[in-house]
Amino acid sequence: MWSGGGLTRRRCYHDTSQVTEELVQKILLPGLEPGAADVFLAFICYSEGPLPEELLPQVKCPVLVAWGDKDPWEPIELGRAYGNFDSVEDFIVLPDDEAPQLVNPLVESFVARHATPRAKVSVKPI
Image 1 (cartoon, rainbow, N blue to C red):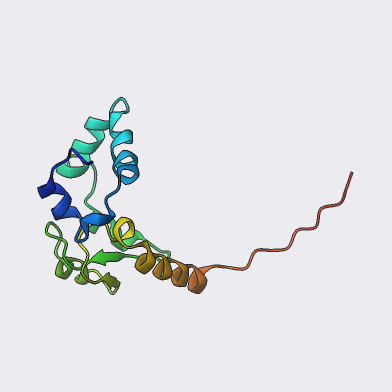
Image 2 (cartoon, rainbow, N blue to C red; image 1 turned 135 degrees about the vertical axis):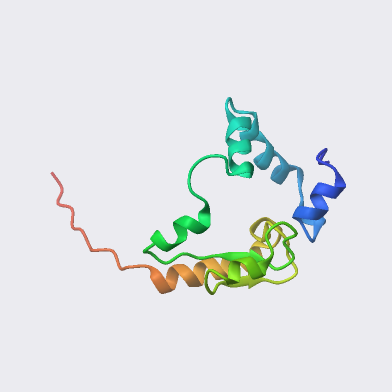
């Protein structure tokens, strides 16, 4: 299965049984595109542009944040300093991959609370 190694898999997923070959391919394939390495390095090094915490005050629309409470790189306490959000218990970095049955209801509830009704449009046949 995943040649990324058990340590990396365990650091990203609390329940590694959810790491399927299909998931691995969805994660790896974009990295094979030209320029992907540069984008990845810029992302992990924060080498260009403002930091996310500098941009947060500019956000004027509702945002859903679901944070894995076992994240080894970005502790949940760090996020709590910026506001309230839903934590996903017993998950690490990628709870949406690992436990969609827990994350999807959070997304559905968020959308239901913040969706605006669409205007009805009538179309006349030509």
